[in-house]
Length: 114
Length: 111
Image (cartoon, rainbow over all chains, first blue to last red; front, side, top):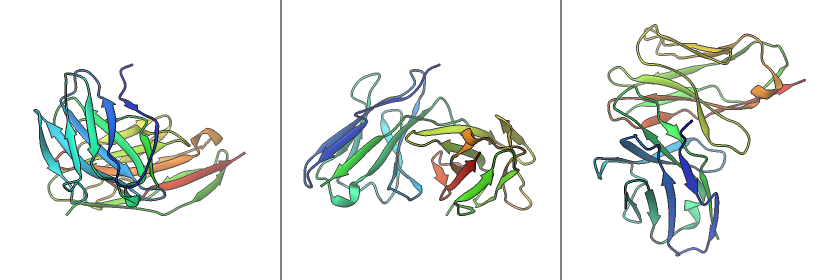
């Protein structure tokens, strides 16, 4: 069964460093998402991406964040200058079509900023 | 804006007990509703969904009915197993396509 994959599974970085989190969505999916979950808190929406552009972003997704689909398979989240409060589990998700369709989640990348 | 409220946990049960997790929502329009489950150390997996009022989603013995009149989507299972121990998230998807999650409910099933 097709699945969303994410790399790395864990990343430790120093405050102020740039990190890139990578995702490979399910191949025929058209909508892509990033969410994050700070330890013990709810899952929060960051950004959605469709047709090679951001379709919606939350107030969390400030200028330090960017997303890219550099080729036909990868979907990346970049944090330019990490802060302590960026420590969280980051989930990528994808779905095939529009409203009502299921979003399929990857296993997540646990980011720890020291 | 849209929001989801679900009962706080943890919920501790014995095996074969009845489980119910309450979920209510606030949304404009007619959202789709989902339950996701997160097992220890893993990501989010879809458990079930319903896309319109009065629809019932079901999977692995779990059920939830989309109740528009009470804006609810309560999750139930008649007889839980130890393997059902996990965190359960209620979520809605409105016109903007993003998912809005509740806070999650941790369920612990003891043998």
